[in-house]
Length: 142
Length: 432
Image (cartoon, rainbow over all chains, first blue to last red; front, side):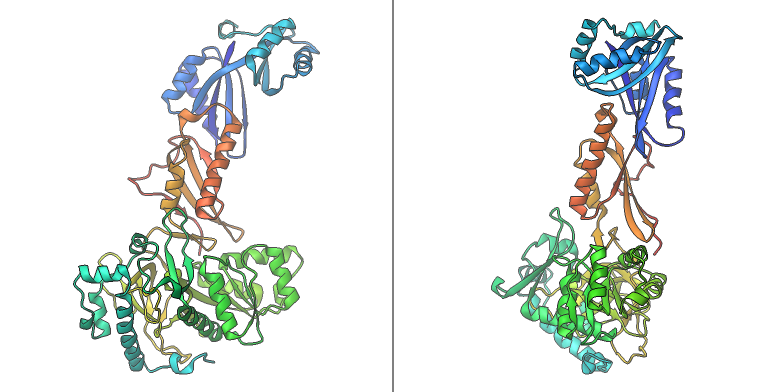
């Protein structure tokens, strides 16, 4: 299973720069990220090649950060790619809490990063439906 | 022109004699309370030695802490069956103070408020809308009884519910309002939104404004907005509440009623009594209260006594507007708030980090409090909803402690300026 790093950031200029700067210095590669927030603050979610290293670097700078399991589902980069996964989730009654995606190889492979409540169960269901999820190591070698 | 001409225009010498007589009586009465009897004994104070008003300086001060230490009944001089009313100042977590009144005390208080209102021009036949909080807060009931004593038709509308306030004013032809200055400015906006102009669409002629320090500019604004004469009111719950000092039609300082209160101004640091004309902390001694007389009570309010005679003919001296506080208390929407209350509340929430800042702002005539709180890095679980819950939790905790709703903002650890020692940061950006 893959891991995602979440970071608490205030909604102010320069806050994301600070996070990305720390990760760059730690030679951590960001595969994908998303920021969601309110007017005053937000949460930055990052899929990185070395989650533990990223977490350690952020914490060393006193930044509120957290690591937790996430599903990184491989999908085809073509019309209907996302739909295939969404359909499985819909039929099997799995609620997506939060999701974002990125392309690995143009017109070939993409990844859907998705947060669900019962993550172990969801991974099992995806496997049953012939879909594969990535581990941290696989993300690292992308 | 005068509610009680004989008292209000009493020659100064006679007034001082009355004060001395009442002071001696007050001291004897005070000695009946467990707290003062203990204080007098510990300090070996013999009351017979108090022979002039000047001798007051030999008596110790009474502070809010003293009242708290003897909470609830330590300063009460009479059996409870003679006590008919309790008022309490804000502060809900064991830091409250209680003040008790006998029926005679309440009559005296009502008379003082009536005297103030009459001085401002309120008469029988006026319709008086009392737009402040009732209950433990003294502003509501204090003015209610005063206005009834005066004989004005009184609408106990209480605070809030702005549309209804305007409806009441229109329905019953309100001529006099008692209102907190910041609320007066806020309500005016609503008049506009409802397509109304208080100058044309109401019969208002007098506004009594108090419970909150405000400037001459704010008074003039209220007068222009509503087409009224606005009079400044000063009181504190330990000295009954409203009715301590009030403006006369000259609007040049507030007469404090010297037949009921002995007022000194002291240097809050050295505690030395200052001469009239110098700014310092107001210290009050009750002269006409039986259930809970207080001697040299330190108000923490800073002001100046104007010793000059007033053209209105009253011999009772005047105080300036309140310039500030000698402690760190601040007032928001008429509610007294001590930074320690905020500190205690926040520090009881485990997710809260070590630093926070309180910012007071005035936006569109409305006062608001912003509390910026650093979150503890360890508690962050990576979800937005968790932060939103925390924000709500902090807001609710502060609201139930302070009785006003702050705007809580979560900020990153170490992002706020470091506070020195235990000092709490309150940044007041409101312009008076």
